[in-house]
Image (cartoon, helix red, strand yellow):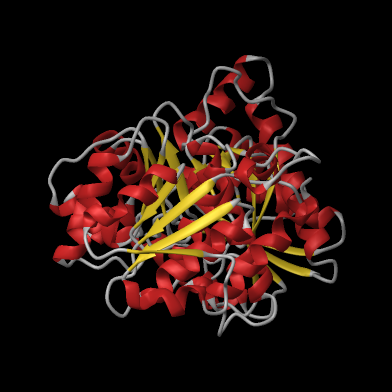
Length: 493
């Protein structure tokens, strides 16, 4: 199922619900729609399921589960409800759901782990988006029991225990699938969200989002590729598609610039030059003669190559030697207006060492460790709230920032952050970031604006990685992903 592109923080989702009720949709009507949509999704996914157990809390998420259980029983399924908490704590719309459940001949039982044995699907309707740390002991026990069950686990609105804003697990239910309502919760896509949500389905419950509410995230998709690469004119030549200069490859690290250079070619850059130590010539162009080579022993050796380039990518394999520092300083001091600049790897670490450097004309591509050094905080702090870390990087360092990792983020001043839902663990191999850097540079060279180029490169890179991993998640090589970039973009003019 195709998801909407917009995701929101939990406060906005709650506002959507209040607005719907204010517009005349009763709260219990929304709950009934949610329960019906969840049951329909469950039956589509597991048509052979006959025995289901709903693990319900005392709030509105539990109410959704009570509706589902009633409708499931009416359809002939063996449905039961295990309540975590006291019946007396149920109120509001959830109390209406309880009344109708009892009228249908069903009554919740106190939670008992043994009652999950032998069921086909466990429905997680425990906490929803209202969860906050620390978890009560009874909630934690129910979550751990659901995770230990042999049955499929299906979460309503949000896996219980997952922070709806950061994606942190407190711990959280590990669902095979999640159906979410009214608006996509950003926590489903951040942090540990994807690992806990399983396959995500969305139902708006016939409620239009509040028009004035801006999303906190937009999910990347095919459109960003089309935006970055308009059709090529029939009379086009390589000079029209940009000149890229890739700088890096410290002693013994020629492979990084080689991979970045090939990726720039694979996304369609017209001319790509690699600048590195003279002895790296053979490694760079030996089996890729389409790349040009520029020998560099000191910063000033870059002058002629910089003059010709429209896009400069620096950092792959650069190292942190005096040579590396001299090259980076020369580039930062000698780029001219209109040139695009992409920094990766040790170029980022050198920037972090250099104090409060800030530019609006660069694209930074840190992984979480590099982001932590740029921000002066721990890697764990970055990973705990990646969206806030992205915003802080944009604010303090400027330009466009690509925060790499699972669910890569792209941010820029006055831009709604983009999030990549694709990619896989097979991409956690040497050289993968170098390929992404080259792809960004190659799209910039063809005229894409920086935010557009970064977003499209992230999406294309992830799709290429998924294509390679389809043939085996272990043993994926970065150059295989670089080659697959061409295939990913083949459907574009």
